[in-house]
Length: 156
Image (cartoon, rainbow, N blue to C red; front, side):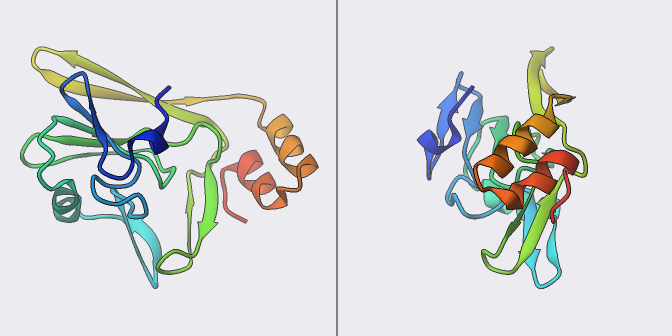
């Protein structure tokens, strides 16, 4: 597993074709595939995603930060992938505007990348685990704000 925070803020290239970053290639705090406003958080338009990708020429860009599993294929062939979160499927944030991000189920998430016939394919995976035990552990540690998110994938 790659530690996202090790590659901040500019990112890192893996295997010559996969760019890794936490938020965007230039900011840890900006969502790559979502935009935030007074309406909350919503999927970003492909043009905004392309703008955020900037000069990164890698065919695959892996990001995180929002915890929302999503793929956007850009017109130039690049693919931006957020594999989702393995441990927290929903949360509230107040950066820029109050908003929440939520996957809607408690399943852990990750992705598999495969290069075949000169192109990259992504398989999004959701995995059942003992989310009740995780929620109980969060409650026992005083992280009561995470309990509902861990059990349901919904923000409280």
